[in-house]
Image 1 (cartoon, rainbow, N blue to C red):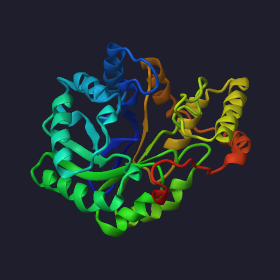
Image 2 (image 1 turned 90 degrees about the vertical axis):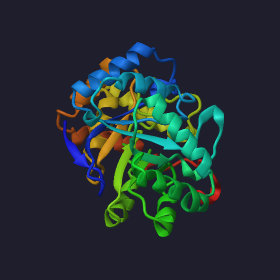
Image 3 (image 1 turned 90 degrees about the horizontal axis):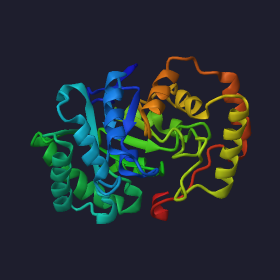
Image 4 (image 1 turned 120 degrees about the horizontal axis):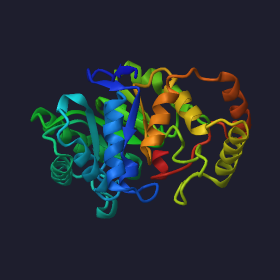
Length: 309
């Protein structure tokens, strides 16, 4: 496993991180013990970065991840969670709610501090409020030693310059913009580097677009994006190529990203993902896949408030 430093945080994170959204049932029913086994196997394979959020399964993912990490020395892993989005419990970025919910998250996770806390999917709310109220509240918790660093996450790339212009942060989680069909995140990497901000890429599989089973029903992509990605999946299948492995190889190979987060439903898939990193990227196949994806190259879907896209 390769490791990178996350911006100016000093945190050493595995190039492939484990996103715990699947533990909350986001992609379908997930057996509790399989989730535990995935975390333990990930640690054994060198994965040391784990990301979760109370919104995943309305706290279920945090509870499961906490159970899996129980008894593991705290210095063996880097842990991040999020605030502001709480699933069935709604959205609330107010300082009072953020402080309360983060305490609850730490209890579920069985830890006394969180390495990085992200304001979760800020495109759905007033970004000015996050900058002037939520982030300062997190900085107070940082000064108290309860969290290590502060970041933001979200889908529209337009949210990041808005935040940078108003305040300082330590890390970002961007998703769906560094994958086979969309690499628009590259355009912002110089800006992140200038601000010494750590970059985490999530959803290299496009939240199911680049999997044999396809995306879940709730996926926000346009019908055209879904159809063209399905063509790429079918092409790889006909060539005997696992597009999941290819997509992860491609994402992890991109420069300027400290860690790429993937979520998995089984130990077997986790092992395939890690093993895939040991093989060189087949650029000829990538070129053929991207030729198929050309009609949707760098297309995004709209989520959140229109003014944040």
